Length: 219
Image (cartoon, helix red, strand yellow):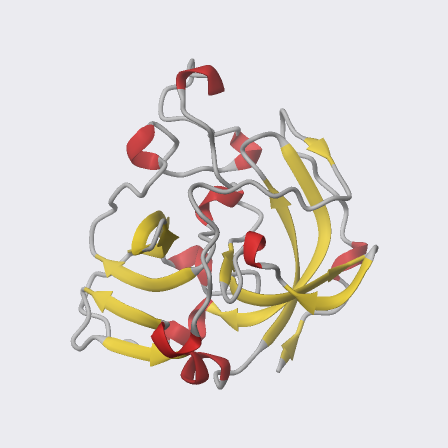
């Protein structure tokens, strides 16, 4: 198991337009997914030489990583120093034989019973480190290690690097699509930024948009 030490001592950098909170707020789009292990699986597909389907046991048998990641939500809250245990994105990448020129992914999660109802697009290269995790446990200064709750995305939720807003981390994760060309995900299709860098305040596709221009947001 990889463990990233000393992250709690890193300097906090609050992106523009954000406020700091010790809580982990709960916002979600649609119904809370009810996990049934015998019906659950995780797919690796898209621009690959062969699709891969993993059972829950297959996923949980992959190498685990613990890492501390700062979270920045587009709804303006930031939470520093939360530690997660999960499977690094690169472990799934190791199982997929990609075609040439794959540079993007789309991460999927359940939405109202549709296993691919929610999605978020991301570039591939920034996801190769220890701060890109499909997580199942967490802790912070106020909580000891515990499973993430169904409302936070149990059994598996993606936490992106701090260089992306948190909507890029689907709850109730169900698969990864590997892509040669970038393609908008669920919120990107509704006018949110394709790149979503909180330190550049890339919230929306149009700089003059505000939350009043959108429906309720899920995180």
